[in-house]
Length: 90
Image (cartoon, rainbow, N blue to C red):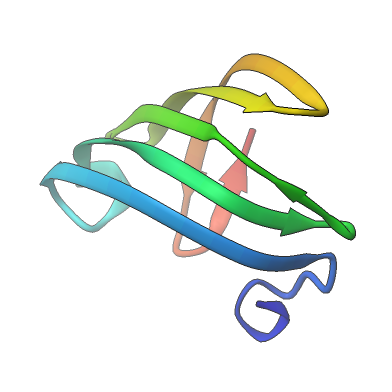
């Protein structure tokens, strides 16, 4: 995964994500997405049972996640803005 995401701490990842909406440019997007990620390897640990649900609308995004791993139980929400072609602010 390092060549794609430029992060050598990320290893195995398997996800089943669905998305629906319209637009490719951040200021034109109106998209909902959700799914599960399991497993994902990060920093020599493999996390399990991660669910994700969110949306991107115009330049903003919001998502919620629920992680039910044997070593972490976490519910979280994040939001932020997309700028330009590859710029992200959380």
